[in-house]
Length: 256
Image (cartoon, rainbow, N blue to C red; front, side, top):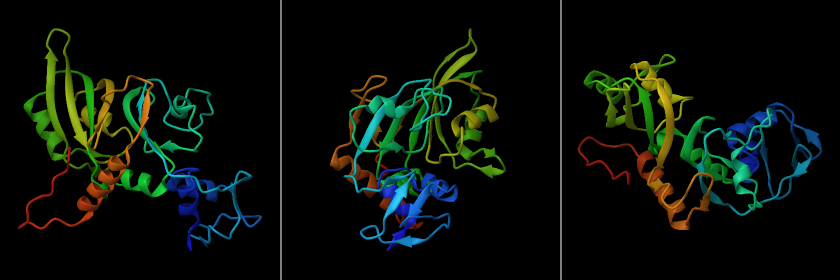
């Protein structure tokens, strides 16, 4: 027996969090009856589950990396009819959804899957999967600004984890700079808000890496399937990072 939201996520309909929203808003039926109760346990082999009238089927688990263009929504649908990331995976028969999101005006590396457990693992900050962004900012970074970012920034009454940050280039005439920043959390607009908080508003943003994955071999709008060894490596990294670190033991490699 498994929780209903987990079964829906594992069927590739949506992430576990989105599955909870679908349940709460009456989009899910169990054996012909609408259920809104969270945490109900079901047997996916015998219970009949439908989402918006479509029966759940077990799909093979798939994993893709997309070079997301700017001005594209990190979603499966959009009520404003803007372009969504799944349109770039037109020949994929499985129902995949993005792992996390990149802002509409942010480009770069985005993962998509129909594996709810994998998506949850990649998004949860306790697994500490690093993501590196390249940002063009207004203003010239100072040593104090970089020090604040490396210590963590208070956003919405919560302090972020320390970021890895370095200046790639500066243009004193235009008063702009290019910086690299690496985080493992996923708060809304986190990179933009962290940089803005120290006086460096972002004018352009791109996600360059996700863990050990890069955009090598892809141009904007292209995608590829993850290799089984890459999926296994992510699971290995998450497992290692989930274990508590002891002060008298060396830190484990993060592969980033």
